[in-house]
Structures are given as structure tokens and as C-alpha cells.
Length: 283
Image 1 (cartoon, rainbow, N blue to C red):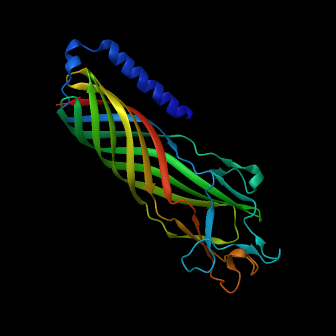
Image 2 (image 1 turned 90 degrees about the vertical axis):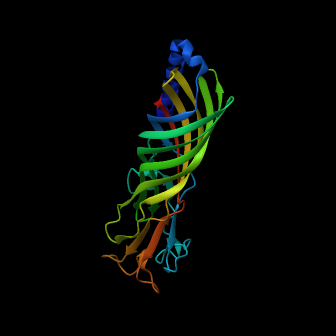
Image 3 (image 1 turned 135 degrees about the vertical axis):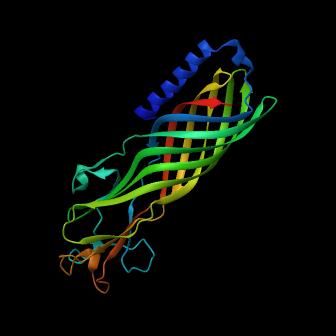
């Protein structure tokens, strides 16, 4: 686990331990039925794919996976230096990439639970502001770097909750659907070709699952610690590489197609892990 998530885990555990030591006797028979509202915050990390690459459409037929080759080098792969997860430190593969850093989120929620003996069934809606980046870089023999970055900015989710009540604690699992806003960007050290965004959808959707513990501090006030995994389908952020001032032998504009080449990242899914702590007020 990353440092940010470890800190969030420790904070959540500490809050629950403090709550356990300060719980009044009346909270020992907590009634979980009814509506509630709450706030939460915590840390996030990216579910990195170490083998992610860039994919190319040289003939612009909508199918990606074409090689980008060097005429002067007898058809050698123009991206033979390889790929890495994160943003490039410089134009050469030897300089490497900065791995994706941890992020943060904060949000509000509202829900309703129904208790049946020790079992609790409910639904919750929440909205979070998020700051989490996910980048991948390709290196060409020029040398030059080509970096795709997506930044998760916000999420809204609707999930079911199924829990088991033990005294003042509710241990639960949760899962459901999520929609999100994702900002896509592209940077490169190639100053010869032109680069134009052809498709740039900032809407994403997917699913969430996870679990947590809710602990009663008082009949109407609870503290929560929760883990959530989010998987989003962000679609394709397509960059068209044009001729610019490049010579005819440029690998992106080789004949018979001199219009250019489309580039996407190989993985359209954006996965994140989140650990949060929060407070709920129950009516």
C-alpha cells in the first residue's frame, strides 16, 4: 500500500478505536434503520497497468495496432525505446518516467438503511471531488516522448449496502454504479509534427465495490472507515499526428497515407483504490 493510503488506514483505525473507548452505553443497542447524511475524505491511488502502451492507427481505418516504422532504417520500429507508466522526465527512455502519485478525495453522502434482526440492507448515493492522475508515455527513436494523462476530477455513485450489526458496529459490503468526470491531456517533446485531439470525451462510467465499518458514537452520530475500488471506462482520447514541418520520411506521414497517424493509450479503463474516514448523522 502506498504511504497516503497507509496514513488513511491508520487514521480510520485510530478513529474507530477512540470511538470504541468513548461509546456510551446507549449506543450498544444501535438502531440502524432510517435515513442518514454524511461527509468523508481520504486518499486514492491508481490501479496501474505496468504493461500499458500506446497504440497507433497508421491507415486511419479506426483499427489500432499498426506499426509506426522508419523508412531510413529499413522499417525498424519508431517506438522501439519502449513505454512506461507515468509522465516522462525527458525525451529519452533512459531518463524514465515519474510514477503516478497518490491523490485525494472528499465528498458527501446520503442513504437509507433497514434493519432485519442483525442484518442491515440499504442504499447510498454520494458525490466526491477527486484529484487523481494516471499517465502513460511512449518514447520514439527521434528521441521524443508522447504522454497521455487523465485526471479524475469528480464521481457520483449509487450503491447498495449489506451489513451485519454487532453491538455499536455495522460491518458492511457495498457495490453499485458510478459516473465520473475525467480530464484528458496530451504532451510531447516532438516539435515538428502537429498534434490535434480528435476525440476527447470527459464523461466516464463504471462500477464501485468495497466495504467498511460504521461505529456509533451516539444514537444519531457515527464514524466510518471505508475502502472502495472504482473501475471507469473513460473511452478513447484520440490524438491525430499531422505533418507539420516534418519531412516526407517522417514515420507518422509515410506514403501512401500522408494525412497522419492516430494515437490512443492501450487501456481505456481507469481504476482507483480509495480509503476514507467520515462521519454520518442519522435521523
